[in-house]
Image 1 (spheres, rainbow, N blue to C red):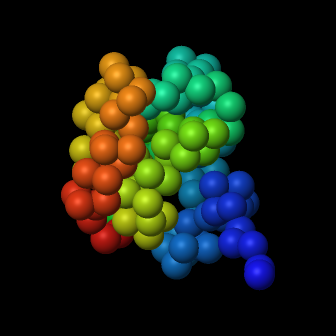
Image 2 (image 1 turned 45 degrees about the vertical axis):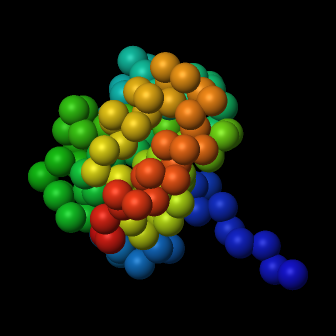
Length: 125
């Protein structure tokens, strides 16, 4: 059985999921700065396999790509990025990602139930 690629580790994940938008050349600096101030997953607290997630997808809201208020740190260590940020589908996004991450951070035992709710709320990007 062929393994699915880990899209979180794909150099151009957005192209891999069909969005095809190139990032701003300023993105690496913004991403690094965000991680300096938000060095753990805002859902589970992990410091491993971190991703800087756009609350509003940058291919739909290009003006928000570099907006620090549009960013949240999520991890792939416990799959917070895919499950909380995207409702378990990288082509979708969870409009309530910040609130959902706070729920999980307050009580990690809620992870699976919050992830299931994120699936129901996800919007197709």
